[in-house]
Length: 89
Image (cartoon, rainbow, N blue to C red; front, top):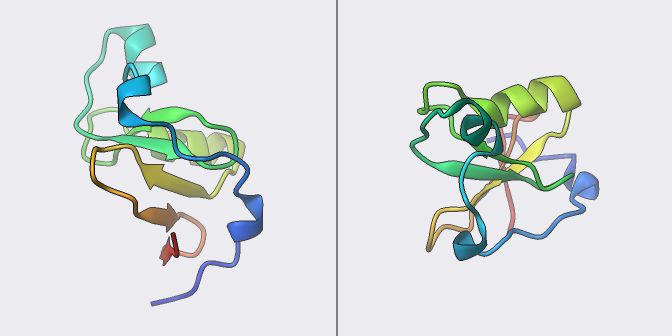
């Protein structure tokens, strides 16, 4: 697996899952999501690639913020879109 080279772009800590109302973009359009991801550059909360609207990926594509982290309870993994790689927690 390739190593992430974008960890220097992490500026946000992961929010507590109880502090997250849902996918910011789905809430605006009355959409639904499967799992939530937080952008570690700006804190945007988006839905995962298994969700109908894939807002976390769309945020990456528009803002070029490469690293997300799961907001699901008990999960701490991080992922870099650019390097298609996990990021050490």
